[in-house]
Length: 143
Length: 103
Ligand SMILES: Nc1ncnc2c1ncn2[C@@H]1O[C@H](COP(=O)(O)OP(=O)(O)OP(=O)(O)O)[C@@H](O)[C@H]1O
Ligand SMILES: [Mg+2]
Image (cartoon, rainbow over all chains, first blue to last red; front, side, top):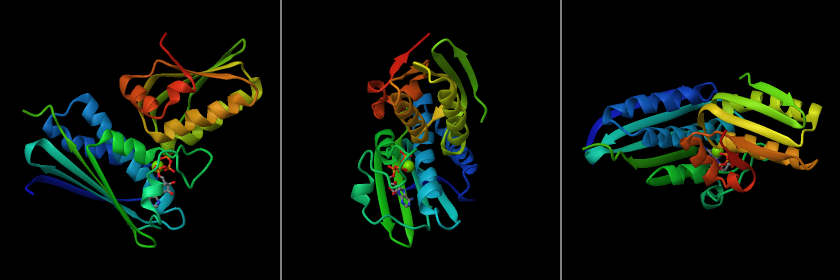
């Protein structure tokens, strides 16, 4: 897999950084000349994954969120969002639409949004170690 | 985040503004719920015309207000969402809970 360009950042899991994280990723991929819809899809997926780190992974203890964005051959991008938080005991269940452990104000649709707005989504997790969400998206406006 | 709230007759309109995410949803929720509690309107209008971004935290915001309004038989209307906001609302099936309208 050829990496044409890459961007990494780490941020403390503070809700004020949700907006910065998605805008930073969007600014990096702007060089591929994505459509408005592609940018919006990517920002939304990033926002979901970053918010999950803040709301779920680091609910008990503060920690960092690690983001890697890669530009691959043919206008494909990959985005990896990783935390060292509590982990997910049952990934399949967690990814089911409307499943949430937060209750009340959360819809339980974050993973469903990520899945629908990206081309491929992979989730790896270990309880007590953390979670990694990786997604790919083809930027089609590129010639 | 501040949001302007108008009350006319049996209708409360909340003019949402900017980006709705986990960080901003809490303030919006508190302001809208206060207005619902005070006025018990027949209709809650959530005007999205100035909303530039929304993720599932926004879905949670709409769903929660829908539940609150349902308690006394009130209805929720979603006004003027942009195409990207509409995409998120549709995915969540919000168009089945609330009327999506343009004005
Ligand atoms: N990074 C993470 N660390 C630990 N648990 C997670 C993480 N991401 C998701 N989860 C778990 O998976 C569940 C489903 O996540 P999802 O994003 O789909 O819904 P939600 O965050 O609960 O609600 P919403 O995203 O709609 O506000 C969460 O409730 C949580 O239990
Ligand atoms: Mg979520």
